[in-house]
Image (tube, rainbow, N blue to C red; front, side, top):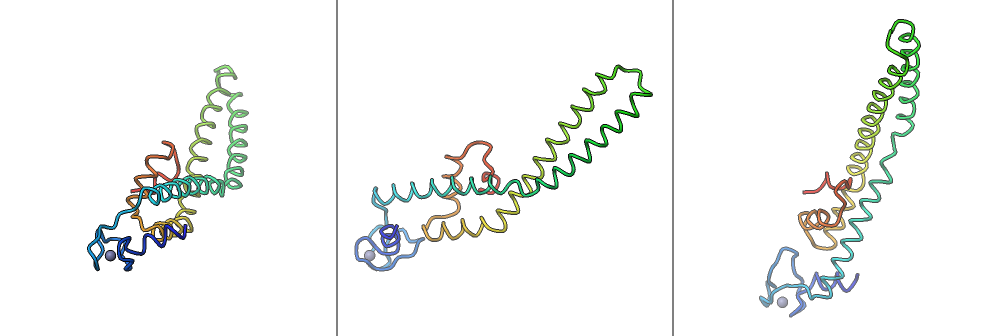
Length: 166
Ligand SMILES: [Zn+2]
């Protein structure tokens, strides 16, 4: 870690401090490239960080669970009432009514849970993770584009972090 930081902030040839955007040292014109070993360690750190960031998003997706649970209770009560009312007037067999109501409620619950989780994840990202990632890429002297590119390569297709990438 220290080795990487030291390496990145100094010219490998003359030891002069270098800017992260410089391709060559402004003092001695030596190309500023990372050795294979340093690059490999940077890559490993980046991979671990990206996976941790995704885990944090997943851990924080349940913020609205109590709210969802309350809504599910209310919905279920409504469905039971509707069923009781309908069974007296509907000519269709009860089983069809039950099936239709069940499909509707599962669809509704699915949408509700997905929306609530997406909201919780977005809020957590904006409140905390965004700044953390900004600090990480600054410390490691990479760009957000680099970060996004790597995350795009190693994250699963349905990863929560994907929506916040470049
Ligand atoms: Zn130099």
